[in-house]
Image (cartoon, rainbow, N blue to C red; front, side):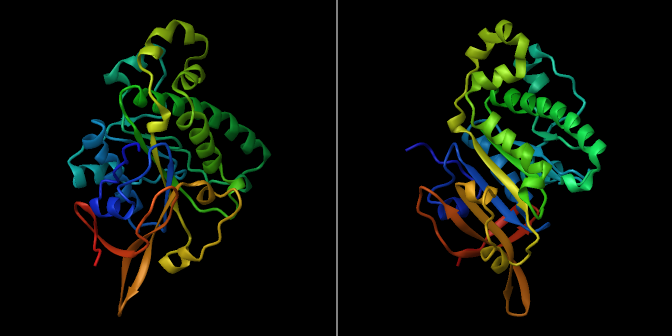
Length: 294
């Protein structure tokens, strides 16, 4: 059996039968402020110990507000994240230069200030947005491929906002592209999409830097309208919803403890492996999440 991917939290790894399965997608779902991003940082930082490289964050927040990844990484792990800028030019030869390419964070919609559904725009705005989005997808390929060829094997997709219909969301459109056309695609074909007319001249480097996409692990952090864990547990799954396609689902929400509310998580789905089905309270401190399994 392939080595499990650690979440960075020993107790959560135990609940997952040893950790996450490589080559699969995990959805972490919960309301704003419940602790999803902190869990994501634990997962990314664990890459430093397991693969020798921390993971990367692809932030899809569309309104320009920060998810605080850099602050969390510094405070929780002593890790100074580096960021790829949205207007950073792509040069084929830079991909092989670690100093020029290796970045931990990319915020694709920075400065856009847009909402996330087609209904928010008129026809002209929609056409302009599609052109802009295609340009940003090219930058997304450069970000992911440029990190994977330098040893990164895990990523977090953050900032997914709740919508009434998944099919109307720009963010899910982008996520589907990334998941199927980058994360679940052979490395040489991702390179073809990235280098295009420069592919042949870059082919020797491409062949020497091949990676296996089946070793990659993806964590999607999905913001919900629901705040209470009970509400998340009873939430219907829409056909085509990413929850239906995920290998693993971790729900994070509030539970009542006497006269107080506290945070708790539950592994709602973990296909292909036994898991602990407990509801486990957790606390958030300066060093991130601490699970309180009793």
